[in-house]
Image (cartoon, rainbow, N blue to C red):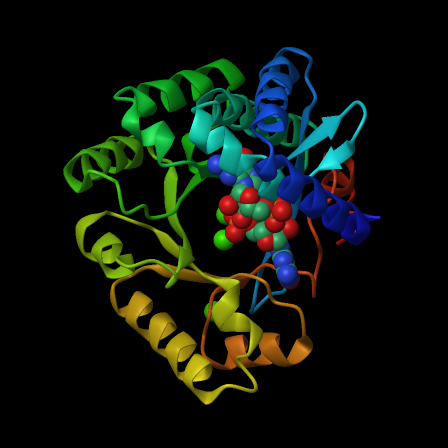
Length: 277
Ligand code: C2E
Ligand code: CA
Ligand code: CA
Ligand code: CA
C-alpha cells in the first residue's frame, strides 16, 4: 500500500507543478486541511546499534486527503514551504508529536524522545524557542524527550539560527542535523551550532557496501562526530550488511526499513509495550 501510494503521489505532484490552478487548489486545500484535522503523524523507530533497542522515534507527517487518500510529504511539503504554510503545519506537527509522546508515557510505556522535523521557515520567526517552550508546558512533555531535526538552507542567516538553536538547547531539547553531508555547509553546523546529533543522509548509506568512497565518508563522519562529542544516527538502513558496517564503525543509532518503516502511533505503542520487548 505504502509504495504504490507513494508513486501515485509522485504523479500527482508532477501534474500539480505543471498547473498553477492545481497548485492554488492544493494550497487552499492544505489550509483547510489544518482546520479539518486531515494531517496525521506516523512514527519511524530509531534503534541503538549495540542493544538493538528502540531508543527514539521520528515523527513524519502525512496528509489524509478526503479524495486523494494518503499524500506523502514529498508531494506537499515543497509547496507548503513556498507558500509559508509550513509554519502552521509545523506548529501542528510539533504539538501533536509532543502530545502523543506524553500520552505514551502516561500509559506507562518506557519514555523515549520524539524527533520533529523543523523547516528553516520556522526559524525565521523570532519566537521559536518561546513557542517550543509553550508547547512543552501545554502538553506536559519533559524537554529531554523532544529532539528537533534541522536541515541546512543556503538562505539562512547563520547568526540568527545560531541564537535560536542556543535558546532551544537552553530549554533542554535535543538538536539533530538532518540529511548530514548533502548540503554545502554541513561543517558550519558542527562548528557554529551546539548540536547533539547528526543524521547521516541515506544517499551515503545506500551504497556503503559497494562504493569504497561512500564507506570511507561514512566512517570518517562517524569518527569526526565522536571526536566532537556528537552522536551519530544513520538513515535509510535497508540491509543487514549496511547495519553490520555501521556497527563495526561505531555508529550509535540507525533508522530504516531494515527495522521498520514509519508506522502508526498504535504500532509504536505495541513496539514499546513490555510484552513486545
Ligand atoms: P527525512 O526527514 O529525511 O525523513 C526520512 C524519510 O525517509 C521519510 O520519508 C522515511 O519514510 C524515509 N525512509 C525511512 N527509512 C527509509 C529507508 O530505509 N529507505 C528509504 N528509501 N527511505 C526511508 P517521508 O516520510 O516520505 O518524508 C520525506 C521528507 O519530508 C522527510 O525527509 C522530511 O524532510 C519531510 N518531512 C516529513 N515530515 C515533516 C514535517 O513534519 N515537517 C517538515 N518540515 N518536513 C517533514
Ligand atoms: Ca528528518
Ligand atoms: Ca533525513
Ligand atoms: Ca555504540
